[in-house]
Image (cartoon, rainbow, N blue to C red; front, side, top):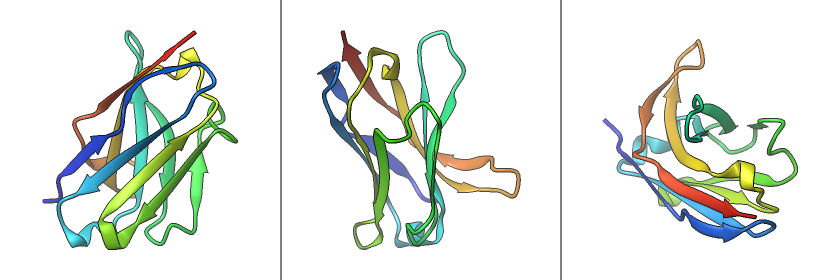
Length: 119
């Protein structure tokens, strides 16, 4: 079973940037499509971005398009989420996930990293 560990969260002012990382414990990571999700206090977890195994295909939530970029480095077993022009509404716990099934349900999750954007 692959384990995922997120890092890079923190406190940033509106308009600032952060880069989240998600490190996987096994080289089989490269065979998994990956995703980022987030959950704000009192809200349901929501999709942020997804990336194919090769990194050639990406998908973003409308709320982050043009501001966030997801990428992966299979040699380092790591995916990234570059977040620019951050807004207070981006405040949430961010989770990376791996191995979606045919229904798009992810089977492997990290523990999450807190991102707080101050106004």
